[in-house]
Length: 316
Image 1 (cartoon, rainbow, N blue to C red):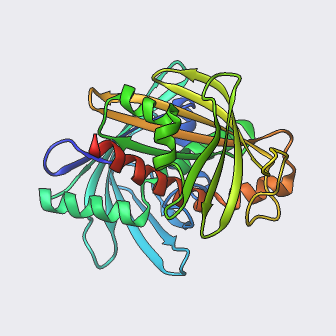
Image 2 (cartoon, helix red, strand yellow):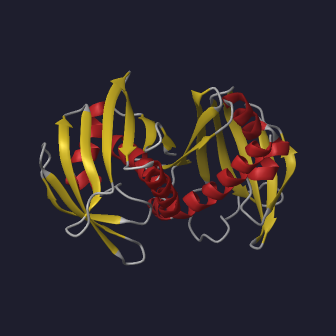
């Protein structure tokens, strides 16, 4: 999530499990940018990319509703593997919306990307922040993580981030307490009831979610619990007897998903949560394709759960 640095700035930090060269290439090579740039469901056509100070990147974003969004970015600073400064959001008939400064730094094979979006006024910053959230723009940086993982390993993943204004220990508690999980994890309009609630390494939870879709049973086995920073579990759809069952509403779906939840402290009362899910157990090509197609729906589902978690934390 973008946040204010000064009154007219939005700031964003992400850490990618990839060397800086891979992240830089993903940003600057048109064939790679096309695989992740923009909110989920968008595609990209690059018409021209002149990566140098004074050069421009002309591209069109194609929305899932068929609407095209032309863009012209003008570069001011290009320092390979270290820094980009450019104006964003211009067209032939419109001036740029804001200036972007992106820096890249590598440590132990991981790359920290820090972005500052500078606008003309605090009011403009607030409006752009609302627009980015409404358009699903934060998913752009999740898609970059997915692209980097796919390029490195050949495996598809799903990634989503959210920053919560709460201490890391409190956020971890709400992720590992069945009582609290039942309040925020289920989709909007649904209810979650635990039939077994053993949140411990080597143990599992078994719960049923009921709502407009009917009832679905889920089993989650915990592989790692490292307070307050890491949770790993494998999840399966099952029937009421915990026997494997088809995924609700999906003819084809991976039998098992492994989910890793990483919590990082951005400030004493500010915690970033990164959720990564990946198919396990020798998923077929058809199952993997179904997983990739459904990443937009997974974003919607997790976003709703995160909204409920945010509301719960706000009431604390």
